[in-house]
Image (cartoon, rainbow, N blue to C red; front, side):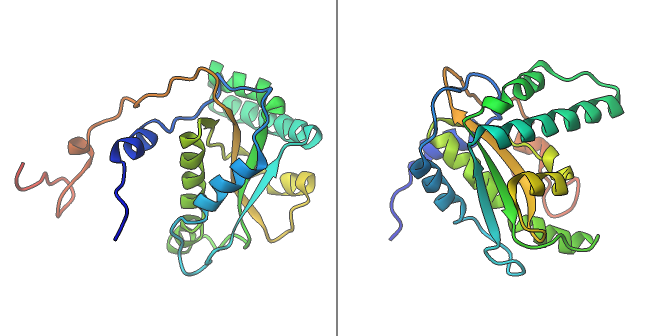
Length: 210
């Protein structure tokens, strides 16, 4: 029989898994065993049959590659904001400034080249890895380790491969900068309720009975 599940604890983790850019302990290293425990849980995520368990995780803690990756991330973010004519939010600027000093960067990768530009194939490709990245973020959150979901570096595959020595056929999808939380107070976000974003049987239909 399944063991009883503490729904309150699980619901709390799910409802408060925010991106944490501030209130991190930049002086405290994260123990490799703790990260391995979180990755073990991430590897339990569902995966499509096409790629199997082709996810790979790369943890970066050395100062030199972190500095190079942080500079690359900052330049991409500046170009992204300029192209849209918007100013960077203070939280994003804070992340860029502190990114070289983050205790660890975790790259979630797939050990297979990207598929052709076809929706169904792409869904199978990315959908076989992204659940593992989300499970990793939840496992970190449960251990009071803050993370930020970032994907900007995915636009610079070759540059990141060169910095980290990744093989050509490996694709990195998500980078999580992580550190133990230090005074961060995470709470539920202000989101629309399920009744306003859920349809039944056909698009636009409310449930038949309340």
